[in-house]
Length: 198
Image (cartoon, rainbow, N blue to C red; front, side, top):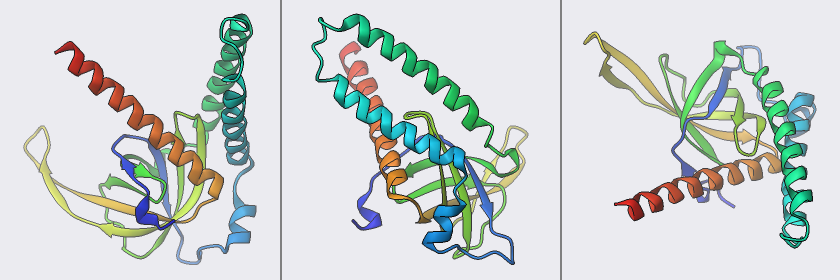
C-alpha cells in the first residue's frame, strides 16, 4: 500500500521527535529492529494480545458470561493503566511535541524551531487507545512557516512540520491504523449525538 493511501486524523498525541546527531545515520531494517527498546516491544505485543482477546470474547454469549466478561474487562483496565504509566516514563520533555494530525504513513506537528527538510529524526508516539508506544524513524517531508500573535500581541514564528515514517514495524503501523480508526469513530459518535440533541 502506498503511504498516501492511509488517512490521517486531527488529534493531539504526545510525541518525541529527536533529530539525529551529525554522526548518526538512519539504521538499516535489521539494526532498527534490534534498536527498539524492550518496553516498546512489550507495549506493541500487549496491544496485539488485547485485540486478539477482544475478538475471542465477542464470541461468548453476553448474558451467559456477564460476570466473567465484567471481571476480565476490569483486569484489562488495570493492566492498561499500569502500561500507560510505565510508557509515560519514556516521554522526554526535551523532545516533546503534540501532533496536529497522525496516521499510519505520516504525522504533523508545530515546532518553535525549524527542521531541515530531508533529514531523519527518531520518533516516539504515545497512544492512548490502544495504550501503546511506538518507536520509529521518520523523514522531515515539509517545514512551513506561520506567524501568529500571542496573548501579549507579540508576533511569534512557528513551523508546521510534516514527518513521513521511513522505519516503522508493520505491527506498529497496524496500531496506528487502529488508533486512528478509534479516534475517527469517537468523533463520529460525538457528531451524531450533537445532531440528535439539536
